Length: 73
Image (cartoon, rainbow, N blue to C red):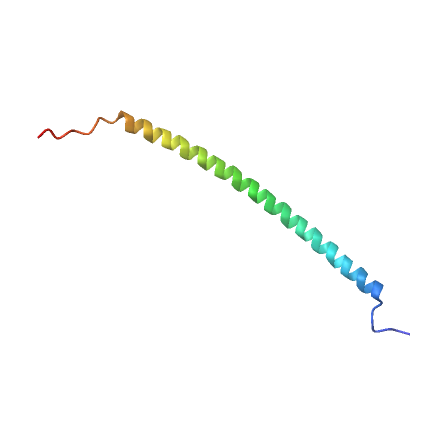
């Protein structure tokens, strides 16, 4: 005798299986996002360092410029 309605335990088992698969997918996605955040943080830190170095070079160049002429009327 074939019963068309699945047994509640089978329904629960199917749902648990789907939840476990979804959990694994979310863990993989989370790991990828964590890696992206880490890479972007390293890139940001590198860019900040380069910006600070460039700012220092510009400030040093500005200090070497002669003072602007004063208008003696």
